[in-house]
View 1 (tube, rainbow, N blue to C red):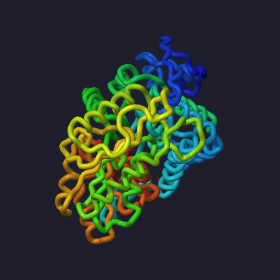
View 2 (view 1 turned 30 degrees about the horizontal axis):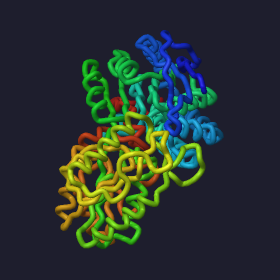
View 3 (view 1 turned 180 degrees about the horizontal axis):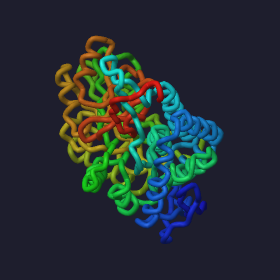
Amino acid sequence: MIEKRQFYINGEWVDPVIANDHQVIDPSTEEPCATISLGSGADVDKAVAAAKAAFPAWMKRDPAERIAYAEKFLDLYAARQDDMGTAISTEMGAPIDMAKAQQWGAGFAHTKNFINAAKSFQFVRPLGDHAPNDRIIYEGFGVCAMITPWNWPMNQVTLKVIAGLIAGCTMVLKPSEESPLSAMLFAEIMHEAGVPAGVFNLVNGDGAGVGTALTGHEDVDMVSFTGSTRAGVAISKNAAATLKKVHLELGGKGANVIFADADDTAVKRGVMHMMNNTGQSCNAPSRMLVQRDRYDAAVEEAAALANAVTVGSAHESGRHIGPVVNEAQFNKIQSLIQKGIDEGARLIAGGTGRPDGLNRGFFVKPTVFADANNQMTIAREEIFGPVLTMIPFDTEEEAIEIANDTPYGLTNYVQTQDAERANRVAQSLRSGMVEMNGQSRGAGSPFGGMKASGQGREGGVWGLEDFMEVKAVSGWDAKTA
């Protein structure tokens, strides 16, 4: 079992002020795989003080220098692919092949995209030809508290840390206590890249302790949080007293709208996307809306596909799905599956309990409900597991109404071969992202949602801008600058 009790503060690994050990559980075995320490308010104070002291010099650095640190990090991160994949697989249960490809790869791609975006970003730019002596200056927001979840660890850590680094911010990262090993490896890579002391700091902890201390700290200028909507509300309230900027990337209950003329692989794409990462993705297409003419065939196909999905240990190579992250999540998913049955949805695949042959580990059966309606609990709540809810519809207008009838607004999906309808529906859906006909968003596309799915955008130019203040300067002397 790994023992990592230290925090990374001001360029050094330091012991916590108060020993408070926490065991990290391997969800495939239900056995401890590591022991870390959870921080206290005193640890937060030390980390914030280091970030505050480092900020003036870091913000004044030429952006090209900050980009160079990100490039050095990227090279080192690439060399640690196997180590990072192993850490993620062990701590949160992503199958090892998927962890080394998709989970590690998300961090690599985001870092590369930020570097590319930053190289053409004008940190100082003219207001316009009408005001030749006015400049708009983009500069780092200040000390940022960054709180990340366990489901895609490096995806979220890089979206925050690398953007903040290039923007000129200094930061304190609190990763999820469920997935600290990958974050501590990330800190090792930042140190090896030579990032100056105090620019990046890491304090492990839980939300009630370190999270609360960070989001309410008077010397923290900005909070960037990814997690549940419930926690996002609490963070917003805690941060309000000090008028911090708060960026929130929260939950989702995405609708995958499949029209009768959708291509032959639309249902398969939707089911497999839903099951990826064991359904633990905020942008998962968890509501499959199918037009009536195609509905019966889609139900039959979805059931067959889900029944063919294999479940197994995260430590085994292959294309299976792994466990969910912990016992609490396992119990929540079981309860919601039973709720779907009790409320009258038709169970066509999966159900409660572990898959056959797996009597230990937090494994969930790939589950599909048909004949649901949008008022059922399984259509309203974010389940965060491999559970798909199918709902029929008749008209385009009805599909849009059902899709938008949710507190969330992160990602929706549209499947149709009618290009005009695809564009029309995309414009009508109230979500921060819409993906159509299996086309993924391009490199550097902004990630984020509307309504209870959060505020702000991550990734590419938008992700850089989110960590920067905008300063208007008049009387600028272009000859001396």
